[in-house]
Image 1: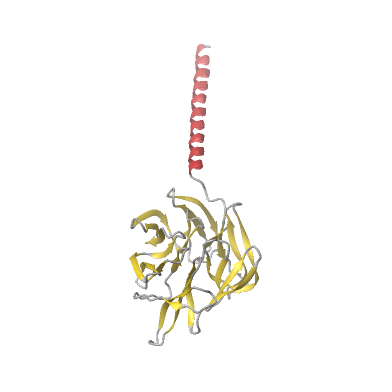
Image 2: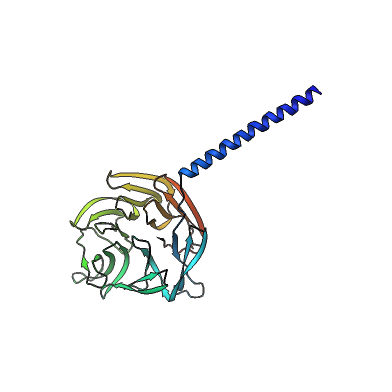
Length: 305
């Protein structure tokens, strides 16, 4: 009888210890999550190519809703060729290149789509970026001085006006990315030899350059996110300091959230984009906050409200 009583007592003590450990683990995880807020609003958008229309003209753009954790679609008023999806600092509108010479502006709240700007004849759009008061477009075309195609950066102070060419000395090609901070003063572009260049538009001077790919400047102009040998890195502009996050980047582009607190990027992909994963990195906590898988991505990303 004494042995049975001791066994019961031991089981009771062990049960209490285990319950205490479980409670401490719960409190630890709860406090950790409370200190590490997830992005709970906004939409990560990407194009979905129609299998029945291999031309790439699509009636909608797919997106992942961070609030509900579900995938949905932004319906376009008609079928467009959609490439180079971008947004602007407010995160309210979606922009995309509908052909080699036009950029379209789409309002998800009204489902209206209109031409935003067009590039000069004999030039074609390679990449572009939008600030609150400027549009920056990288184009490729045949110049008057050369019979071969050359890349050029055009600045639009007014989307309906004529652009001015940005005077740069480094060589670019049609694989070069460009981004701009919300005030339109600092520009980041890539060169044909895989150098990332931070450029001061107002003063027409180069601030700094370093090797990397897929670079994008934050809306507040404080950081540059980029890929170094397929690893996500952050460059602090004020401190001139590079940080490797340890997270893999498999496709361009890398995009910032409208509040500059998070970065979205493709962390996994195959050659046919049939198995892709998008991760969301927290700049403050230096961790991957969320991720989702999809078979619909086509190497494009944008973050809207």
